[in-house]
Length: 368
Image (cartoon, rainbow, N blue to C red; front, side, top):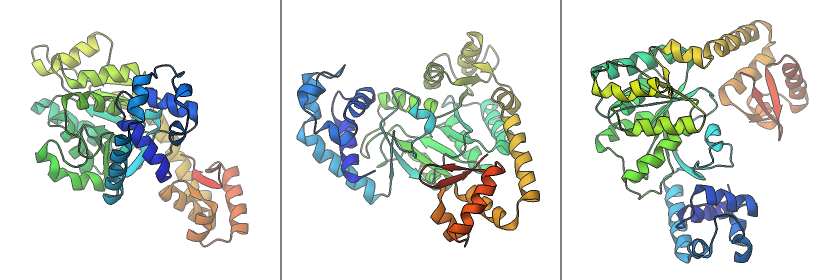
């Protein structure tokens, strides 16, 4: 994203009264965030939800100064700005009308894997909950899912640590800016999460972990995932809010049942009883519900055939694309030491075999 456009997006994010839904309406109407500030106010006022008071906040010069400072922080700390119209933004979150227009990213997040699940639950986790999280994630290891959670005490941090232990990518969604880590004792886990995944936040670097921020954070946790799993929850709690949000997005929700006498199982039991969540007793329940076994079998058969049938030069190209993801034909030629005229034939042959596909802009990727 060009710097001028990012500044304009930051101003939209900062302006009082301009939430994500209104911001998206403004951008859609004007064609870009930058064009919003070049449009006449009389035209902007015709957009549903935009009034004179909101426009006064939108064109407040202090927002521009604040946006420039925030951009400086982003650049100085090597953060990635994920704009909702760009490829580096979580694909499922794009489908959520209230998804943030901008996410700040730290770490080594790779969203090529379509199997993304959220695991949330109580901060006061029991041994039952801890054991279930650890066993559940260990059993999911062959399917290589991305594990998303909120970096809080209890179920969240246990899920992150179990993912790291099993060499799975894990993403923590924060309820504050990157200037701090909350809760503070979890600062010791930042490095290992950045090495095997990373962090998302929609909040500017100096924003504190206010109560309302946790509710906003929950929609990202639910929205970017294929399914949300509630491990333990009391009758009321933030994880139940996450389950409600996931249901509103028409995403799968699962809950782990517990004894009727256990206070930290009441929330999960109620979700199951009211048909707001499917019952989850093992990793197999999730795998069966999401058809992961079928997907994995298809992938395994294709990969087995590749190593048998592909000529040496095609195998080299395949291995490169499998490791690096989408790549331009020039990059493939350079890294695989193949002249472009010869590479074009190789790529065509591989496309005919159904192992790669061409994309716009002379990009190619492996078919999983």
